[in-house]
Image (cartoon, rainbow over all chains, first blue to last red; front, side):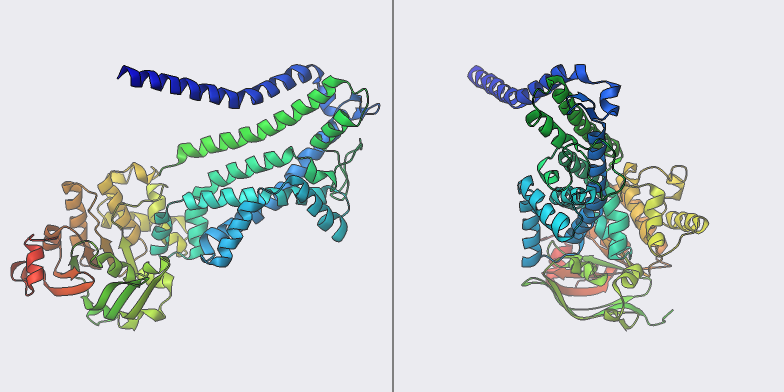
Length: 282
Length: 252
């Protein structure tokens, strides 16, 4: 008995230590960024364009650019991803072809983001002649986040009990009415959380925007979707590697803003999930 | 209304799940305004029979069916899924309410059939709840989430939900299997009251319930209808030895 208890204690201690190893690098990184960057954060930093070869001033254009790109990506990927998942779960017959599609979607989420960047460059910038602009960048980010959105939406739809569909159909509802009124509302929390998470990941990506939209230095704000913009991740890359004698606090502060932006998006998804879970009844 | 006595008639109905022959050559006529009890051990095809009538079996991949089902003398093949299911409602084994309010549960059916006016919906919801003997218990809390109701209340809510689409036939698939005796009695009482308006089929594992509630009763065994007769006759002087064994509790 006591030996078993000792074994258990050791096992728990070991597991706790391993968990700490998982969390420690993240916590340390964030602390390091906050510690080094917080001092440079000010209203001017957020609301002014960079000056003097980006060694002074703020990050306003990059911040706006990133927000625009995320909004644009969401506009494209949300409807497409949700409707594709609805089709796959509710309508598509289970055959070789639909299984192949499902497998491909899962695999797509593992493709390196630089590949999406090259794809976006080839298709949107060159072939469709959009040029390097917000439209190309947003579409590229949208395509990159699609697999995750489709997969999480698919899971959210599959988590809605089969009985809900049977109830609805047995009352004489059509297939579409069943999906619209009896399945989608109950899957919505899961769909939203997955979507926000995947877009928050897209917010921090550099590779997909590298060739499709990001400007090295462009202090004025865009006037249409066919303009280039600066974007936070790329700006961070530029000031960290391409600008000599860059004051470190500015780099760290830029990183901090990006981290906070992503954290805010995740926070939205957490609040949404919490809000809907209170209402969830099954 | 059609005056023919058979509301539903099955002619050589055979049901298959993949290669499994679940229902064999079923010939059965359902009389208007009767309660037909269906008894039989597990896997005897009772549920498959019900779900064949309102075409829910087709939701399972690999299901196939041969034979004819007539609804009011019309081949049910000529009736669309939604119209057919509106006419033939079903109550599932476990009370299955949607995680929305009591009101919304009942209003769901009428809404998908195009009733949009609030006043009319209110009326239909109240009517349905009254018919299912639930109105007095829930009239003050119609906006409460339906899953907060007790099991028996939930099952009567399911009945009200089915009644709200104004069906002709109501199928019950072991409606009281999860309920206590008092809730069971309330569901049975509701069924008795509904007799004047609807034709009902009650599939049950509880032979006593079948003998209490039904007018005629059928015994299914391994996909075959062994015997179908007046309930009293089936339980007191069954014609088939297997029916006798089952109703007297020698097997099953």
